[in-house]
Length: 511
Image (tube, rainbow, N blue to C red; front, top):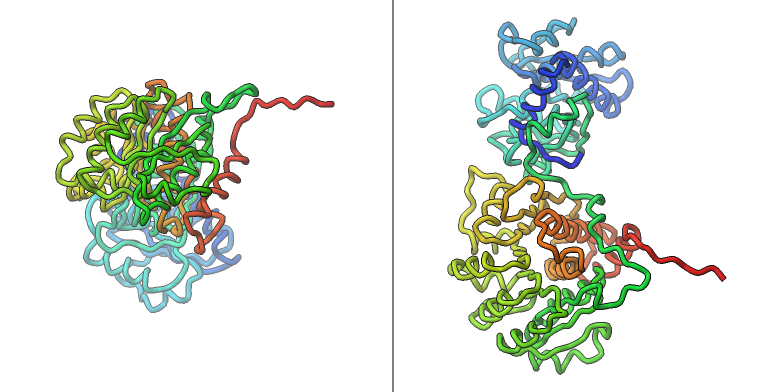
């Protein structure tokens, strides 16, 4: 269930299913049943439930849930927004099946919300295209001020399912029940925070519906570990790849060490940390598994990259965004290695991206850009408000020629080809990953994975999945430490994660 569907794509899946013989009322009945099941888990037996029903199919799901909850012994009250005499189709069928009273929502005494154990938000779902105002906005604000558990049907009312943005006042849900697949709005912030805990219910959408309707991106997950390099028993270190990490001056040396050590931990066979002379002198005895090389400038880097055993290079952590860094980036872009550009290597090109993007597009090896939101703005300008974060990342990837990792709590990974099967959204990153050095670790993980032999072939889907795997592993490694996490915790945590998920062909001889 990893595909993410826009509201339009989900609507097309509904229509495909109905056209292939499943009545719409059957889909609505199953949706209402799923909502009722979650509502029961959130409310004590015989508890009081207030169902707020809107004027469309979302309201129809609410009427079905109300009927099922009432038949199970719950004290259910229904308030309708809009004229119920204008209901049509499946929504009217669901309304007619509700045998209780329906109070106009405008007549609700919102001071009585405290008497209910649960408020069921079935006002507006994925079909909403404009901000709420008038009575709808007032009702949503009253729900949010009630401080009661709220279960949203499909999406919290007021939330854009494509962009994850509130279109105006939006319900703050405790939980959300959606159907068939997640939408971008469930994962992209601030939508993700508005949804609360999310359950995806199977309502019997046709198995070929997504193939017909399309999807917009994929959710990362453990399934991506199939892109880990599977070691044979006779593997040697060079068969596992060789990463070159470019470190910075002494005052920022930690960034390069973090990237290099975790690149080695991610599975590559060797890592060389290239350092300016002043940093090299102070690095003796630190990270003894790393090799060292002198790299004072772009000429030194070009010399190092002539080693055809190098399979990936990470450049940017700890580097100052200046002309010297730009020249090193150009030297790296002239090489045949996979390349990860992060931090200073990105910011160095603020306001002068044309030569960078031209060089990236001319390469045959993959290039990965890993900007956070501020760095993204410096490279690509102000965000276009009509685009979702997914769409912005896809557009930036096309314009730059790079695999783009647009970082955040909802990191998006996009390939320049713009395809949905080469676009990912990550949702496992805990908030405490927002700490100094965390991005340096991510750059190292991605470089370590890209260096391995399976990523050498020119398969966009495989390369992007490998980068997405790095983002997912970073999130998994960040979870155990909790809010006290510091970046140096991530290497040991990554080891634990990889021990759990890595494949192996090793055969022990029994004596």
